[in-house]
Image (cartoon, rainbow, N blue to C red; front, side):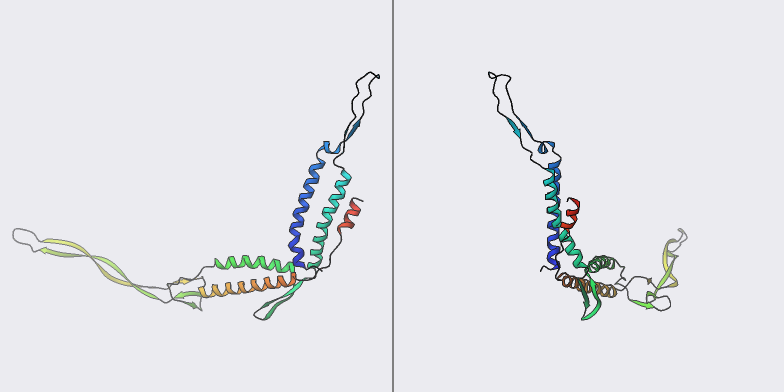
Length: 243
């Protein structure tokens, strides 16, 4: 008795072979010359006339034979697909994470759905914004945002100053150079806020998803190990269609 994973393994090959056989059959039916035959003999008008050999062409493709071959080809495909789909109705397995059963008796079709969704979810989590590691963050209970500690910075203003390079004399005025001095005029207190996530949190979420992905794969392999009962539906279908 075969197992579901064996049926799944050969299904793709059977599909490809069926498509090739059908394409070849269709190609043969589109060539009228292969479907046609002829037989003719020659009789001279009188005994003295030229004798010619008979001519004949055999029919190379018979539509009824093509139908029979098509039924044989597709019967295999119909049977193996039916065997897989019938087995999928009963193939189930538990999803177990860290020794605890998360979901019981999950059908194969849902396990495949979960695999796809978890892969997309992992991609989404990897794109989550992460808090700037250069800052020290804490959760602000009043806003539920992440915040930094207040940082105080000085606000300065440029104030012109005079620098006397040479005192005035009775002959020359004083030589004065103007320069600007940064003079503190106030203080900024800055607190940064963020709605991003700590890297630790993102890593924890990714680890959970990856762990569940592994558990789902194990469950799928277990479910696909279910023994199957061969289904024979193709003969009935084509017995009706081409009978």
